[in-house]
Image 1 (spheres, helix red, strand yellow):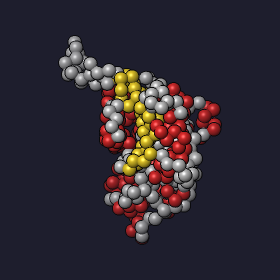
Image 2 (cartoon, helix red, strand yellow):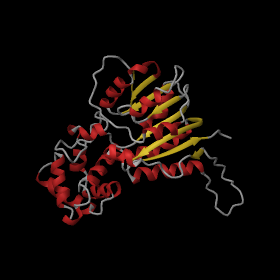
Image 3 (tube, rainbow, N blue to C red):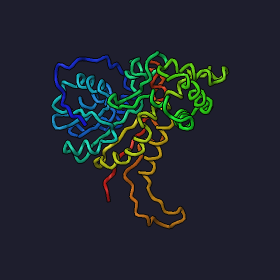
Image 4 (spheres, rainbow, N blue to C red):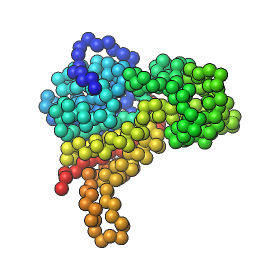
Length: 325
């Protein structure tokens, strides 16, 4: 993990990003000026900027991101608040460890804005977008030695099928996997457009009208490569546990797989009892960690979607920690 306090004079990167559900998230965090807040997906610091400018000298913001470009851009954006900001290059799944190493035992608020950033999508050489021809990469952490190319060319056909079926939810997963495996027999699949052609040929023409045919497969590869769902499942409850009483966690998701995980973990943390429903009282001893603030997810307004088309599928869920005992 690389720790950095913000330094002046860093280059400004083209990390343009319109923060989704910004006002709703800031309101949901219920920010205390002297509190400790953690942005586990720092990105270009759109949300973090609004958090830190509400803090006084006694407050603190810890920003975590695995993308070097995001860290550089966020450092520049937050430099006027350098006395109360620490940025760490890491994955948010390491949040508890990161905070311990900073001497922080609990947080008053945590934010996760999941998925791929606008910068990553719009930077062709990162290989996230099916709209630009580029090497197959899709790494959120460019220090990761494994790329999307390795998955596309190295996974057995059964694993390709499992990935596209489970993470892309594509009804033509079997066909796409089979055709990828066949195409690479003639040489490695190197670029996004090469993969586009294979995917398009795997889907009947009448089904190619509903959005880009590669959307689901690219999503599946990205999720697999960056372990996005695994990381979320394994770390969300631990984040809830390090919240101070009254502290809140806000999670923004962009597809049903993420949202389902967040919804279920929040529900289980609110009601962890595993006693049979016909028991007169709980005997399992499992106590609630807090309460779900958002019974239904918060979604963007029509006005926000008109301004930022990528906000369309976003959902915000909020959970509040309660005192133990």
